[in-house]
Image (tube, rainbow, N blue to C red):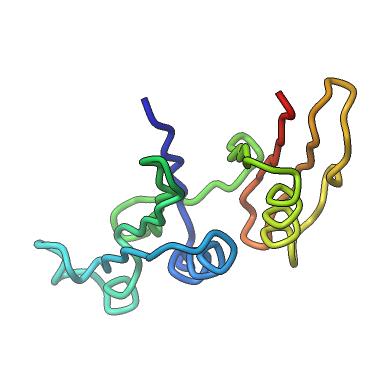
Length: 138
């Protein structure tokens, strides 16, 4: 089983994923709403929204997202009920990912050695997505 987090954005999914790509690397796959059949009647401002974007993270896992389409009844309700937990292979990689993704966001817990023995930090990025970075020495 693989974990593939899926996020919703309010019109800036492509922008957010270009930012995520700058941290993780990899090649983006982006489909616009106008690429899908039956979307020719969408308002012009919605035709360029992202229908699907994915960014490979390694080991068969991908981060995926789409934009909400108001004319189809989709409403974005951002909140802290969705964290993406990343477990890098090294302490240095944990620091690099934390610093990259938290840029312009709000740090909740800076990267520190925790009482349970791991190196951990959490934050909300500049797009309102909540992240946890956890490097386990085990």
